Image 1 (cartoon, rainbow, N blue to C red):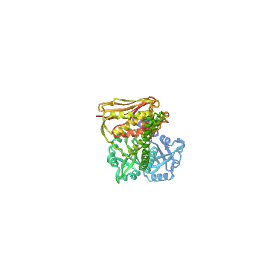
Image 2 (cartoon, rainbow, N blue to C red):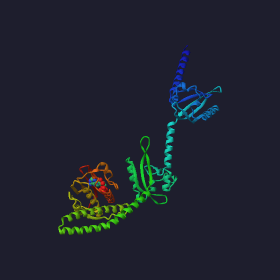
Image 3 (tube, helix red, strand yellow):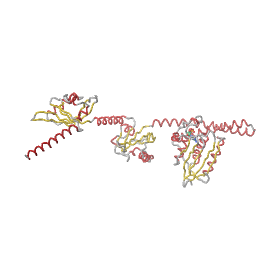
Image 4 (cartoon, rainbow, N blue to C red):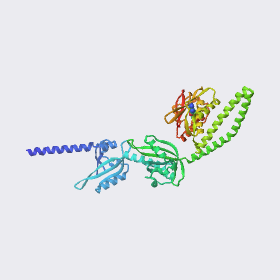
Length: 480
Ligand code: ADP
């Protein structure tokens, strides 16, 4: 009797396990189905139905071929299974109820009873997302390969990890020659310090756009390139490398050189007649003052002021052209700042009669710099302070001594500069969008020259400004 109870218990336990297993197969996440010897679906679990979107009634009893995009695949699979082959990862495409096509891998073998084919046992693996991602990356790879711009990826240690065809065309090295090599191979010796600066910027999460520089090709020639470098991030947002797009801008540079040559030539030609005009005006002015002809004095003073403005503009153009050609030379000497500031402020009455120019705390400061160029910097800042304070007011050229450096500034009570304009003010030809100063003439060169001259001195022009209240332009210099 005991035996019977035991057997019943065992039977019940095994039935429970079988039911559990059946439920697991039915409810599990793996799509499974069986197909009979005639290719008719005889069973499918929930995951299989969910994968394709059919109900059990719509799916079971149908020929499996009806769901395959390609008929020949089914014939092939069934034939192989009939030969007792186990099918592993057979790529196929299935049609869903909503008409979408799913990319799948089919895994299947045959269940036989006493040697007779009963049915197939198939596990369908959905690889649609993976396929789409693969297609997308193949498309991106094709774009990279066919791009006209050199596209290179590298590690934070500057080791090249990919190199497209355009990079080969531009620099002359093949991918095989460059992958695994350091990018430094492309940098001219006098620009080697650029790479650590670029990497620092990128490590801070910033990217670098349209950075114009030079690079060396395999045959040793120098190329003008514009670089855009950005971090490459993985799906989790971790930076795993850097992508670099290099564009050949040699043609554009040549065009700029031609333009600069033209500007330099025209400016130079204008200088000579203007100088002689100015001296005649001065002679006439002296004569008119002597003769007490007040109308002539006022008219000639104005004419002379305009001639001075023109001279200043021509100087800016000439300096710009020199700078662009890299012909700017810094001739440093040790000089007292105060007399220079006085000279510059002393010229102001020729430019304005409704501004009050003050000098503050610039005594006993000696600079080791190019006196003439620092003079140009101050002159530019002062004439801007006058130009952009149409209502007049106080302008201060001042100095603030710190331990080793002096902060030299020009402060006005003029129109001020918006935060947006402040960011771009020192670019070549940039002029602010402020409507109130639309009528003020200028070319947007002055501040670019200021910033370049200071850069050559290892310093940097900066601005603090409140629209409507005024601006302070300043820079730091070492003093003796
Ligand atoms: P320009 O005066 O010939 O336009 P600059 O390069 O000297 O060229 O100046 C660029 C722009 O910066 C000006 O067009 C002006 O909008 C703005 N700017 C310069 N200095 C001042 C200032 N002191 N106050 C307000 N705006 C200024």
